[in-house]
Length: 267
Length: 108
Image (cartoon, rainbow over all chains, first blue to last red; front, side, top):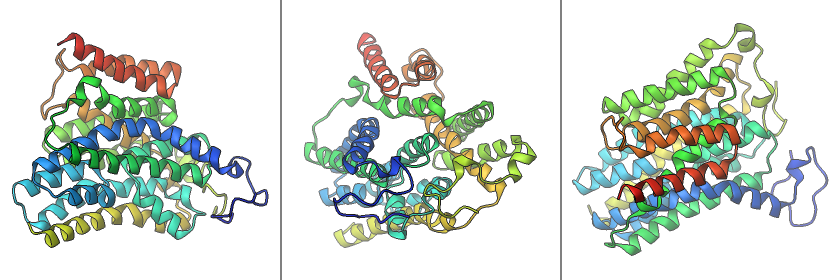
């Protein structure tokens, strides 16, 4: 384990080459990975800000939701509920249900954070959105050793764009804007497609899991269970993937790509 | 809703969102997990990403839409092909955004 916030002086050369890359380069890498997500986030956050304003929410409430809750679909759901005068507990309960899928994301990514400090793990978890999960798991599948500066640069930029987009929307208020004409609403779907093709789907088993998860999620959405769709579809499809995995691979435990990122707490 | 109640509601929303994001990170990181759990968790990324991707494409406005007017859905075919052949992240996103904007422009 390395010291974390070493001052600018070059730290002692440590375990891995990539992890000791200079911090500016790591920040630049993280920002580069953040750009497509920011492209997708800003228009959506802007729309959230506008809708919040229209629904009569004070500006600080929209901004606080984006800063502290930081979960897109749950924020829109809350807005809808607040607009019809729902009780606070109903808003909180709905938020819980909508964001429960993050349990799965956190569990899937946890082994990568094995050697991290608690507060670093907590800060990372705080900013663990769907899109952050997708990018981080794809990046970690490619390079098990990533500088923390890269990871946090990504999270900061993306979270910042969500809050900034919200504030811009609140300020723009009643202006009706057409983000759809620019096709920006396709930034996140296209990013998901790129991530799937670029290695998240590594083999036929991964492809089968992805197709099943997509089909189940569509089915659940059509049944009106859109808040449960991602969680239930992903859990079922992952279980299907486990069933497809040969027994010997299952019992041989930690493959290299699931090894703790810091090479610390292996078994 | 009064301001204090609204603030408390948002605090509650933040707490129930942070909890599920935080707890597995803290508790699973230190433990060494049994093999099947590791294999299961390894299937989660493709499953989650596909489950996030598919509903907005197939069910854009709350109803199943397989019609020719559902540009996003049909655009997924060349976009996925391009992504798979080039493995180029930015090219894929630029193609998706640009094509959708063009289609919408042409469709008036």
